[in-house]
Image (cartoon, rainbow over all chains, first blue to last red; front, side, top):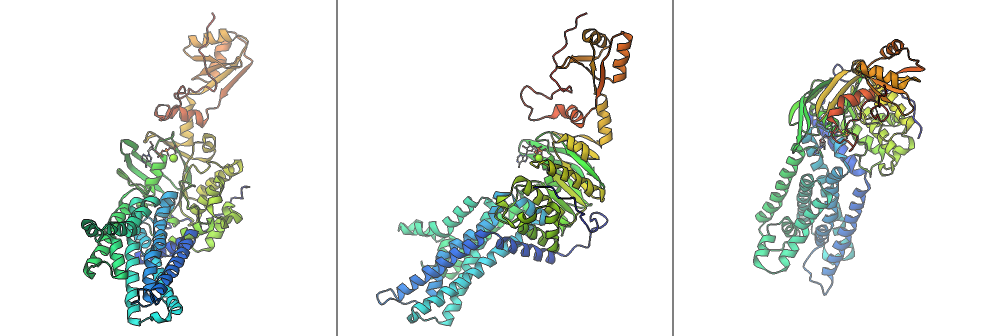
Length: 271
Length: 320
Ligand SMILES: Nc1ncnc2c1ncn2[C@@H]1O[C@H](COP(=O)(O)OP(=O)(O)OP(=O)(O)O)[C@@H](O)[C@H]1O
Ligand SMILES: [Mg+2]
């Protein structure tokens, strides 16, 4: 590679004399969020995760819903079951997306430049929390809708009552937003992709099912304290749980993870 | 400009930076020197707010770096060229950077051209050579046309063309009135590039002076090389006058701590023939080794702060 001529840098020199008027915090936050969105769009893993989420949510969701619609199936559900069941499984790919958005910068060292570009760490935290969480929530809503519509096409007998649809979508959004915040928090705290993925999967999927599967009472009680159990309740209405308890568990875990992860980003050295 | 005030950083038991104070003035290149582990990178990281100082502070244009809303317009930095997400293209990396500081997107193509990244900018960073990553890092630093620049070993891994290009670029940036802080272990490059030197060892300031002053300090430690058919006699005469003399591998004598005048005068007094007399120009490398000799943290066994002479120097047998 040959060295180019030293071009002119152009423009007035900034610095002490030429420091331009600074934009306000709202503008800085808007730019940080726009940058965050560009970050997500410009790596391939984001698109692979969305593809995996789409295949899982729509594919498995519709298959499960069609199964219940069979004459021999359990019955008693509408097409929203497709979206709900699909999102319960497809959320894993979406949570991978969130974890990678946060932790890959620590693994690659990119967090250094990122903090040079957005040195106000509170601003970075706000952008890094909001953008991936909104992305996976919106993606989950669209995929749930697609699964519901496809299920209705495949098995028109299921029906799709609008009131049920609205409630179902609120649940999908709540589960994905809570899961997304949990993933961001754990990612910022642990800084390691493997560590954050393992913890999120354990809390959100593995432990809730594992603990509940032994039929031991204290294990079931313990499982009800995990965010994954509350997510299943929101989607499928199982196991027995009050709405208040489920909300408390979901919000509690997300808030705790966010506080710990936020502390880590705001207070610790960059790498 | 950059102002470092009593900066201190403790990592567990290691005091990486110890009460360090210096300024980086606009319009000149400040060379930042010190042995491995001296604390150069740590200092730069604290200036950029990446690491939190244990004590003291660093100001850029009079304010802590973390307060700037458009930091890329104030400071451009290349600390670690490898610290880039490998899955993004070079151009996208620059687009993200530009967006954070509200820099127009066309600037991205300008800096890509300026550093000579060319079509590689549209490839993913994963496939970049070290030199291409350095260029991408420099492009990022130049993006916001900042008045302050920090480069941590930017010549690392560059070919000869690349090294010369960085030297010219850095000189030009300082010539335009910017403050440039440049660290490097390449003393000959530093000698040609820097106007001012900040030398640290074990986290502490060793020297903060202009290149001229530092080189003058080294003048006292210059070495004279003499070629003479009467090496033994001349050596004895010089040593009687308290000078350190050692033989070079080719039979010449190396006389330390004095100038050519003294050696010439002694030879005349003793009526000894001299076939050659040369003063080793004291290079920055020699001065630097002299200054930092005590603070080298990771000395190679058997080479504890090598002395000034270029060749190994067994003590001369004096035959009267
Ligand atoms: N994150 C860290 N945790 C613990 N110790 C650290 C950390 N970063 C640096 N150090 C230590 O601080 C000291 C200064 O390191 P630093 O990287 O600043 O040196 P340097 O002058 O840049 O060296 P080099 O010329 O090798 O780049 C070293 O002893 C190093 O081991
Ligand atoms: Mg270093």
